[in-house]
Amino acid sequence: MRTPIIAGNWKMNKTAVEAVAFAGAIRDDLNQIAGVDIVFCPPFIAIPGVAEAVQGSKIGVGAQNMYFAESGAFTGEIAPDMLTPFCQYVILGHSERRAYFGETDDGVNKKIKAALAHNIMPIVCVGESLTQNEAGETQSFVSGQVQAAFDGLTADQAAQCIIAYEPIWAIGTGKSATVEQAGGIIKTAVRDAIAASFGEGTAQKLRIQYGGSVKPHNIADYMSHPDIDGALVGGASLKPAFVELVKNAV
Ligand code: 13P
Image (cartoon, rainbow, N blue to C red; front, side, top):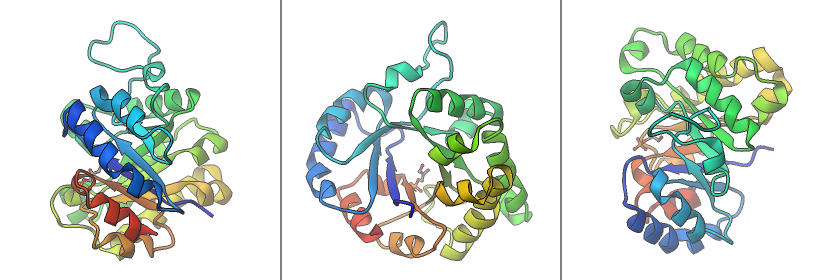
């Protein structure tokens, strides 16, 4: 069985001081919730402090991005080895990185390989825009993103990844996808794409999250779908009620 995983993507919110205080304030409550993996993804500068704040708990730490090179002249970037002392996870290919910072499918593919080579579990984001959704292109676009991201991986590597299906129109809008919409795309465009490339066994191992306006009141509905293994949570992961959200997930 796949262990559900709820990750909080704090995006560009909270100073290092605020992030550490928040992590410390909710860690013990979260630590008591069995049957679910929990991850905080703070801004880079808060990562060491948050890692220390959750030490000795079940809570994992993830980065929101990472470059694929080992080191060198890449101003403003972060290398895998800089994350490994603190992070078990890294979010790659978030739609905001694709939209505002020129992230490409090819770059995401390179980053996934680099993360896996350093034993960092990638949370690979895919998802269509409203225009694509209304044009009926969701299925082909999302499965294409999955194929491009996982190109050249072995089945074992693919099984270690987490995919987050985040329809762009549902992010930060309060307009969440229905369980049928989210679960349907996760099954037919994401899990089936993995099955086509790596076999059904691998597809059944890989965890797939839904993301987009996930809140304490709707998480249980998403989790009731057999193909949804958790959530990548933005806004609702910034507040103490994140504890309720995680409780309601199990
Ligand atoms: P919201 O939960 O704020 O819609 O953000 C979702 C998201 O982008 C998580 O990565």
